[in-house]
Image (cartoon, rainbow, N blue to C red; front, side, top):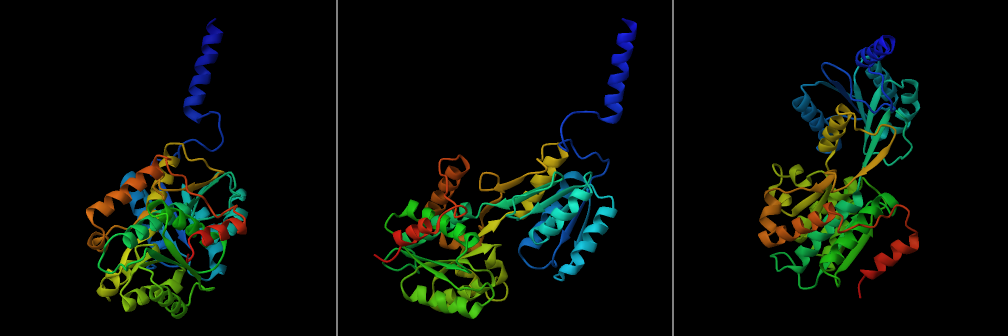
Length: 364
């Protein structure tokens, strides 16, 4: 009996001292001072993804008293691999990277099974056991954009025309862009089943002149508001909104902030933007890692419910949207959070299904 008790005591001490427990890399990060490093495949100052990720790192430092560092690896992809290995050699608890480094990360991470990685904004599902990757539900934010656009077009606003017509400017006719579109269409139809949506694809993500040309065509055809899902090409949409005296919705970051100081009149035409909340998702991931709840080895899509996406709400949003309209947006947002609304996704859709959606909202 004494031997049995002694054996149990020894086992208890060993578990306490060495952390023997079941489960695969799901325990909390074991460190006195959490150390987190962010590798940016680009540079800060983009007023978009990278700046948002950096804000997330600041939130981690505030929340956990963590030691943090940012490596700006630049746009030269040959410098990304050395930067990644430098971070691994630096004894950081968590290394955070962005989608452009996904292929490299998935090659390197398995060589260092004890190192934890977080990869944001990647649509690649395959994930090594020590990597947590996350993407953002672009269909969800497309739905919110469609909600706002349809409310603007249906309401009696200063720049709204007689017919309920809105527009969509996509960079290319590909699933990643059409996922926004599917949500946009469903969100608009949820507000006004009779709404018309003008749809254009620029075939380029970096041609503002083309973006302005296509947008002016839509405004002249009666669009009250146009949603930009065309990257740099969409900057031409913002020019067109000012020229045609129409409304615009930005994408990825709060695009009104790009012009608030330099061209406040242009900024005033950008009612809102659909935002990937990379800062909040970085904080969420690190928090879950700290508590041992982050599912390393998996890929997750973060929607409105998870706080991964949302709308920019600034002085321009407040100026255009009445309290009644804002309340309706909040009601739809709550329905998304509670699962009362489930948005379709272009990923996995057949082209015939997407074409049917386009035809449903085309000019009658």
